[in-house]
Image (tube, rainbow, N blue to C red; front, side, top):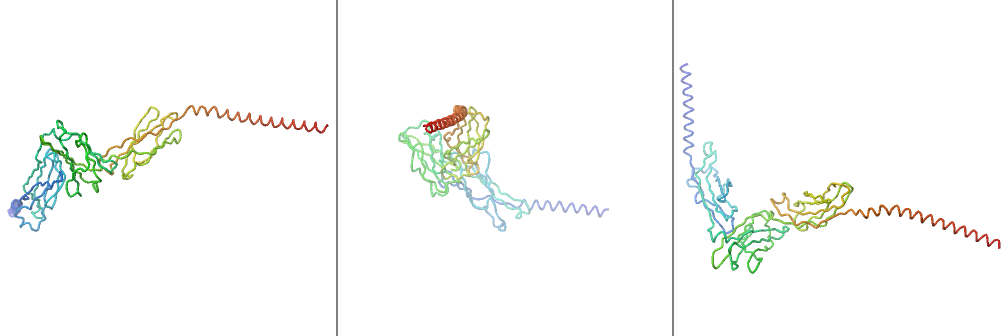
Amino acid sequence: MAFVHLDVLCFYSLLICTAFSSVSSNAEIKVNPPQDFEIVDPGYLGYLCLQWQPPLFLDKFEECTIEYELKYRNIDSEDWKTIITKNLHYNDGFDLNKGVEAKIHTLLPPHCTNGSEVQSLWSEATYWKSPQGSQETKIQEMDCVYYNWQYLLCSWNPGMGVHFHISYQLFYWYDGLDHATQCPDYIKVDGQNIGCRFPHLEASDYKNFYICVNGSSDSHSIRPSYFIFQLQNIVKPLPPDYLSLTVKNSEEVNLKWSMPQGPIPAKCFIYEIEFTEDDTTWVTTTVENEIRIARISNESQQLCFLVRSKVNIYCSDDGIWSEWSDEQCWKDDIWKETLVFFLTPFAFVSLFVLLVTCLLLYKQKAVLKTISDLSEEKR
């Protein structure tokens, strides 16, 4: 028993020593954070580059694949975006109306560290656009619409308290352009720029589109305004046309229209239909350009409908409804039906009387001819 007790004590001692040696071994493995972490603005109106250099003293981890965990956000945002990468840079879009903050640390995978992941301390960086001018000088109510997925138009109102001698300029950039480009065709009111008509934007869909509207004045500085959106999410299509309304029977109505003209594929549309039966109106949606609707009553006197279109969720995250189409109506003319109801039997009676009269006249003519022939024979 003494030997068994001794063996048990030795076994537990061995386990404790192994655990402590493992903890000690892992505690000795350390890695430094990335060097020279910074946020660089290449002048693309919000498209920033986060870049860094490898940490010091990586020579003892030559067999390891070093990764970096990057977190970043606009300063007033609650949520961090997180990226795991092996690269030494990462690009993304930010709202430059606000500050940007980011942090990064080095990750050593478990097979390099006796089974547990090792992380370095965080390295942090921030970026702010130097503020110019007061908040009141910024433009107001910026509105951009991508009409029929063909041409972009943006408009804005001048800042509060600014004078007419202020000159606003719009610059834009998206991935594919070599540099930020100024608006080539301004919309003007009283000589002041209040909007921009954009040229054809080649290969600009499904990517961030960056805009900056700044200004200049002899008396004071103007605060720039920055915007980020994707063009497919602000498309406003043309309304449908060639509407037709067919009353199939006393219970069902068939509504049909043609797809709006332009480059938008048929699969990208959703339609909203406003249908009115006498004094009752309701609205429904469909992705088809035809729909059947049950009538409330087979005695309804007027049926009307309008349609408008929008890019659906399969082709964009959002969209703008088109204008309503022209109204198409069907009217049940009760006076015409009443007239037909009474005229139809009258027509049949009149036709019958006419036929009887013709027969009588024909017989009378035949009798007179017979009498005439007999008179001639007697002579």
